[in-house]
Amino acid sequence: MNTLNDLHKISGTFLNTEKMPVLFLGHGSPMNAIEENQFVTGFRNLAKTLPQPNAILCISAHWFTRGTKVTAMEMPRTIHDFGGFPQALFDVQYPAKGSLQLAIETKELLQPVEVELDEKWGLDHGAWSVIKHLYPEANVPVIQMSIDYTKSGQYHFELAQKLSALRHKGILIIGSGNIVHNLGLVDFRNFDKDNYGYDWAIEVKETVNKNLVDGNFQPLIDYEKQSKAFQLAIPTPEHYLPLIYTLGLKGKTEELSLFNDKLLAGSLSMTSVRIV
Image 1 (tube, rainbow, N blue to C red):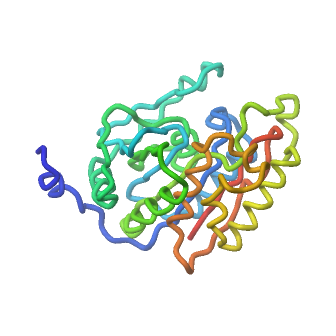
Image 2 (cartoon, rainbow, N blue to C red):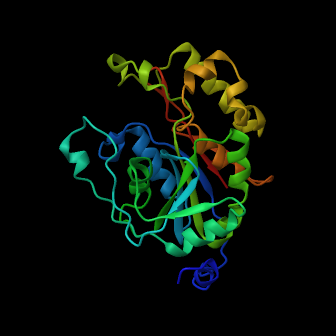
Image 3 (cartoon, rainbow, N blue to C red):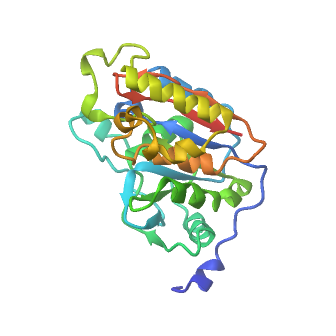
């Protein structure tokens, strides 16, 4: 079975469903995987509102590649792609199955963009550290799609739109990153201070939130053209671009709501988005 036509015979197996929500989750520190805090509570409360998906497609900040790839292994490994944390975090396993069928359907939907079926990656912490709070039993298959670092915000927005058919197949699409994410300026002395942000972080959060609620997405897509505050909030794009995928999937009449909408340690935001 080595041609796309052969592979197509085993795709198309997801039955039509009601339209699934689409999410952007501010994942923050990997420690959110094992700590109890307000943000973890926010993820669990969100889970109570979600219909049971057939599978999950996650676009994580932590799979940043040249070109686009989707995981296509039967059992993706749990990747501990971080250092300096307690052993308890490295001991966490999230044994969700993969889905070759979903990988193939994703590849086909994104044509003519070349998409590589990847059997090496797995689930990085941008995926499993938040999905484990939504589905702690790891009973929903999960695949990841990488972010092509050579492309613009507009490209990623338009690429996301090609995935919209999956929402009618019971596929929950999750972007996982952080809108404000400048690790170099984290104020560790005030890490536990509630909703604490530098002036520029507050400015970006308020501007982004207003554009999100107003449905004014173009300035968010063109984030590189915005103020110096945006340059501080988004010094590199990998944590921001998953938001653009979520916005690309929003239907015209759908409602967008925010949760976990707080700043953290001066230079991070945990703001998350639900579209339904």
